[in-house]
Image (cartoon, rainbow, N blue to C red):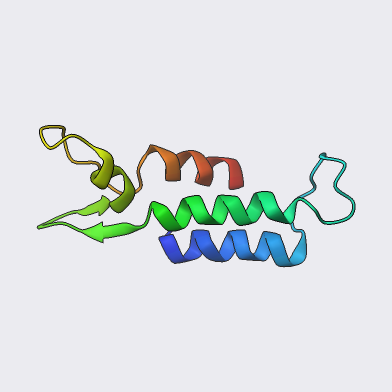
Length: 84
């Protein structure tokens, strides 16, 4: 799933209550959780490195001598897995 597709999936869930939540949120208050999830995805956006796509948030927070973190990072992979 691309970054834009992932954001669209979350937006669709917010707008249309696609997912059947067992959170006792019949008043729609689960939307704030989806909005928070969207913010996490927005932070972990792909950015182009020299020859590969990197995760901007993970790259910004890693030590300089640590390996590069490709996109999709572990955070995005976990979110995509749960939305599948």
